[in-house]
Length: 207
Length: 207
Image 1 (cartoon, rainbow over the protein chains, first blue to last red):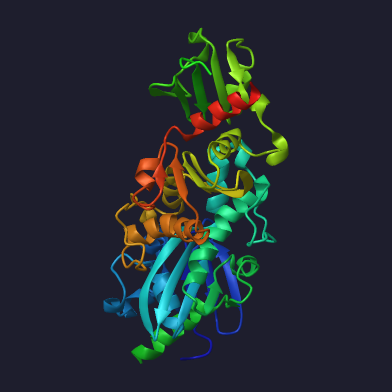
Image 2: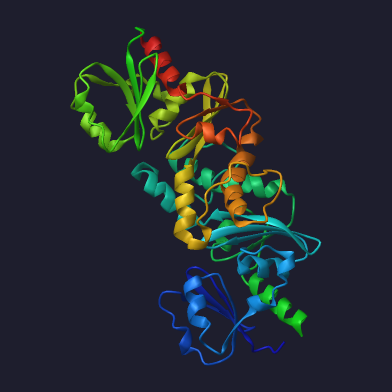
């Protein structure tokens, strides 16, 4: 694989580029993919962006390289590429949604989808103005809360934490909220470039 | 306590009446509390309804009877009343929000708030049309999912389940989604009248 190949991971809200040296983010709402004239190897979970990119000859969809028999039909390609990046462990990809995927000895063993941190906060806010709190990342996970902010933060974090820790696996944290979530999962390995590693691995397999 | 006393539990979306014999629900949007001329003893977590009821002399706010030193200032009165109803256990009140409260030997020991089932589904739908699924209540909680509907259902149910079961307590299920959630918590005691029991106990204490 050439060092200056440009990779791009496209989510529901963000284009995330990586050229082997540095990474760069652009908003799905404002970035025009036709403005890039170089070859870009991408994955996308965004149906609107998919439709645009399919008409641009220099944007190459890596989902064509996926060995689908190891995954399931409607699984997000971002999750698949993350699984390709590791040999064993639990991947938490915290973006608009939080996906949690289990890989054992190189095999995808299932996973689940939790709403992203912004989505969770919005969901409390929509239920009642009395539940409109920012999340407390310094929350004590070992104490049932006795105040509103912690009651909501615990509802978001402790439920996810209890399920994740149950698997007793090495944890990889990636996605836009990886750093923030590392306060909740202090032993996790934060790797914001994890998906690019998976993309690179998939491309090398092909060669 | 007279048998024909009417109690009412008012949430974000519903008036829930109980007269000692049968219970009845009415929508917050369409029910006019001024249409009731009898004495009604109520609790409410709904700020809009609070404002209306404070002007009606036959509606009596039971939150005045709460012994606040056992709880915290911004705690929902519905949660407090539920805690008053039991001596020991974990209460899951599944409505617009899902509140989970721990009572040990008659003492409130903290609790948390999780979005309600409708709110969770809406939250996935808002993230992406690709995450718009109904919840699978028959989900196998012991298997990491390999399809989209289960990946979302597991995200909603298994996270909550893992945290709840960790406490190793008798579980009481109440609220509009109590019956539905009893498929996830098969050993829980479903009691849709739990809050009325708490209200009754509080009124008896006063006498």
